[in-house]
Image (cartoon, rainbow, N blue to C red):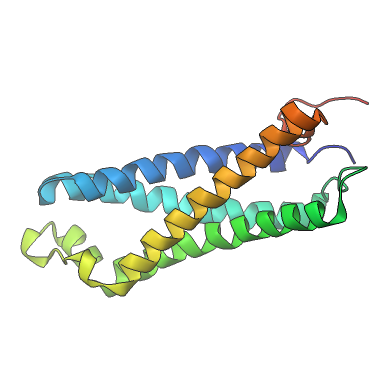
Length: 174
């Protein structure tokens, strides 16, 4: 097998797009002034987090079912182990992030404020440790994605081993 399956490739790219959108909305939530502005954004942020979690779980299932390409030929064993570890870390983080968000909305009173559309019930999320955990996971994911992208670009343009074709939506014949 030279490439990931079409469905794994599609989920990979869709998860990235949804993560970028959720990251943007999370930033907008932090910057939003007033209860009305925040309440308008929360449902979309929640939905994106839920979709990322579901897609990550589906992708994990299909990875086991469809398999994955063998490590690159000629690659260094330690580099292959680092790449595998980085991928596993991304999966763990893409599960932990929405779970921490779910914990936050269900333990801080945020969901009650949003459902009631009541500004007086809006909690100060900065006072809750789960908010800090959620933010830390975001920072770690962004760093991990940056490393993942940098490694892929290094392979593609410096080593010229055409690694990006493995996760491309277009199918290639060898």
